[in-house]
Amino acid sequence: MATISSYSFSQLTDIANRTFIYLNKTLPQVMRNASFVIKDVIPHGTGDTRRYAEDIDADQYAGVRDEGGVSRQAKIQYGYEKDAQTYTISQERSITKHMRDTGKDAAVMRRITFLGQVGPNTIDLDLAHRFTFHTATSYTRTAGGTATTVDLTVGDGLALASTVHKLTGSATTYNNIITGNPQFSKGALENAEKLFVEETYDNLGIKMFMKADTILTTDDPNTINQVRELLHATANIDSANAGTFNVYSNAYKHVISHRIATTATGAPDTTKRKYWFLIASESSTMYLSMLNEPYLKTPADGNNGEAFSSENWNYMTVADYAICVVSWKFVKCSTWLGV
Image (cartoon, rainbow, N blue to C red; front, side, top):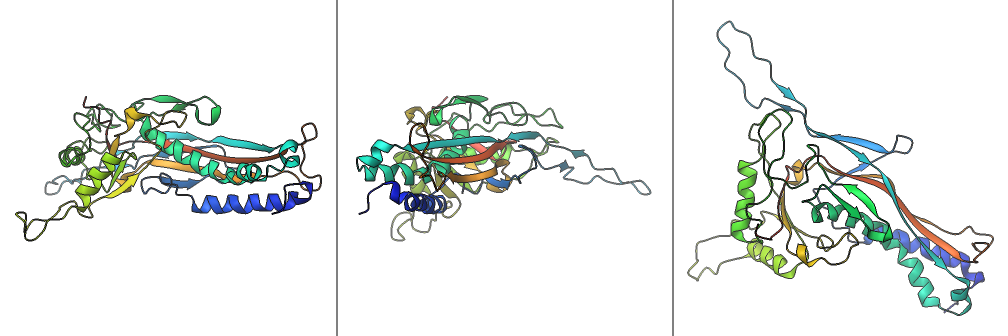
């Protein structure tokens, strides 16, 4: 195997670029690829913010028109709006002259090639943390070693989860917290479904239909198994349950995120191990807006890519994006804490 030296700089950088592209295409980005995350692109030169809004609501029902009378004009009601502000995430890794001279080839390759995981992992963590901290109006993001305050409010100024979410055209409020914050079970799922039936309004305060299609959970084995058992249970035709069928078979997709039950740094957080959510993907207003997909900055060729004062070879990954949630009508949630 060739050693890492000044003579293999070009080859090393080529490997880094190829691996970076491969990982960005193949890593399982669970949250980013979930159907309830709406992907958007911010073209260069068009600013660093985007305003997103709920659909415009109008009267769902027509009034009676008397003979010779005029038709009543429909009420038109704008929903909430929310601005998404892009931010930059980055990480730099250095290959020191000492590492090159002492033949630490494996460490060098790991340091460079694993850089391709950083951008996708960070985007997925930031998306997952909208669910991790859904009971708060903000949190201090410390993943990657820097502290940044992240706004988690939706258009009405409240946390993602609230019992008194507001509407723009009615004094009616709605609740998207499953009663009692239960652990996942058949009964708990039915209560979440009931919230979609009884606590889902348009902005005029009229009941509206949302079809839940996704169950989102953490990677807690017990919760995962509970969901799988419910969705895939069958009855033996010769058993006492003959003639019955599973009403939940194929009713929901199950999305498992191993980044929800974490702290702001990305470390495990057992207090959130059984969080779960029932989601109506088609009604989502959760946006991921990409200004720059993760890319790799490599040292300049021709001078062996060395920083003058340190003689390091520096490789860096960067991405720019924004995450915005206008309304959480499309999510019913439970912290499983029973309160």
